[in-house]
Length: 111
Image (tube, rainbow, N blue to C red):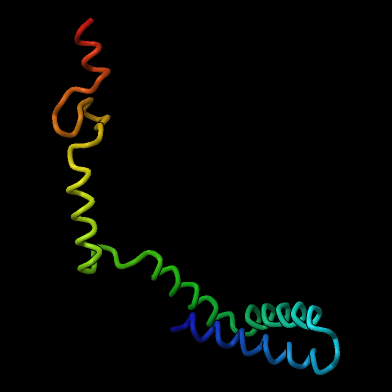
């Protein structure tokens, strides 16, 4: 929710400054650059607490909920685990995951 608030405040500042610059006749390119700089500075200087909270909300959403999976996420993970079980080499054991010896180990045993 903090991310939405912060984004809306920055957009509002941007469009107010942009409209003021357009009304003053600066041209749309210069107006856009000035509005972007003012919105950036305003968000950084005057809404720092909200900016940090928005960043934390975004980081929490990116990390997910540790140890908790939704039904679809758990179903996807189960399908992936079933598909990969026994298909890949386990370097710690020197064997395939299904118990077969690796090609290197078989070659050493033959010589």
